Image 1 (tube, rainbow, N blue to C red):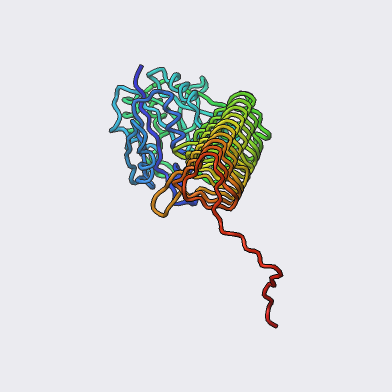
Image 2 (image 1 turned 90 degrees about the horizontal axis):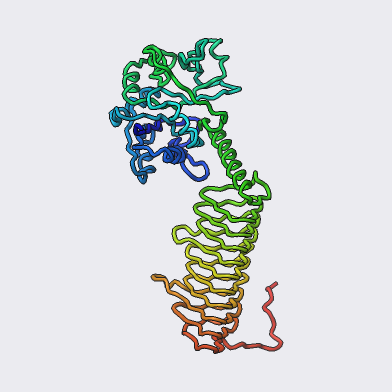
Length: 460
């Protein structure tokens, strides 16, 4: 088997996007268009990827710097698709196959690329085509009476008969590198746009007597390019619906498949239910029987079996991650931040924020509270309006609340501090020193009541 090298054309400005961001860096499902294309190639076990950049080259190269086996060349000036691939040829060895892709065609599927390479059979120029009901704007595939490909004619150069052809070229091809190099060397710009068309390699291959192969996809979305915000939005919805359909096939219950956004990887066990308008980002794992309420945003989180996330909850684990234990109840309107590690049967209620804190089994903070940089024991009851004061203006400090503690409402626990097991903190207290197990701790000013006190009145 010949090694496969990939050339991705990513030099276009994308004028119709009306954006300073290079077109291939616009995002679909929270991932750059170009990243989608690169990811699709990984299933082929490619030898290298050569990225042809142009407009915003520095930004594009920086965005892809994390990709192993990827190199970049700059197309300057930009003189067409054939010229773009010519820039990559010095990086390619003649012992392989070259697969040419477009960086603004994000939904190309690995299975289709594999089929195209198989059609090539290690020796033929092979084209990915589509039978399009509306072929406007695409190059037409011209065949002879026996069905052999003769040429690809760009629409601006096509006559009326050629414009009536429905089979279009997708912009994706694969060919033996040594042959492609030769055909590219024969290109000229004698056409309506005065550009070097990649599609003209077809006529040079045919002139040599080469037998061209094609593989046809029946999914127009798979080869659709992004040239405007409207097209990007359309492909976003197609991608999300395909994701929703895959989840439904796995047995996930979706209240409305049209109102789901997965912007990363969502893994679901059996009997998961997801209500409308939920957004999942990064890596999210939902255990058996998990229920996600409406309008939740959940990122980089693991939610164990039987947990319920009530509506309007925001969870974002970022790099540290968030874990929600079995049978936990979260929300509504709760916020779990990086490092929140919640044990089984923990309750986090409305307008409670948890950051870099662990809560053991059965701990509860049911409303209007903050737990930051804290270790909370089993069965702790954390009162409304209470906070851990974890920041002294320069450094973060940790609060430890041991098992079976009851913290009253409107308390401030000034870290570093430990509340001993079984202790109680009276409502309204500011605790600055650690407490003994079982102790009642109250730290507040003495109440003063003045009988028959009159409020001030406005002067007339």
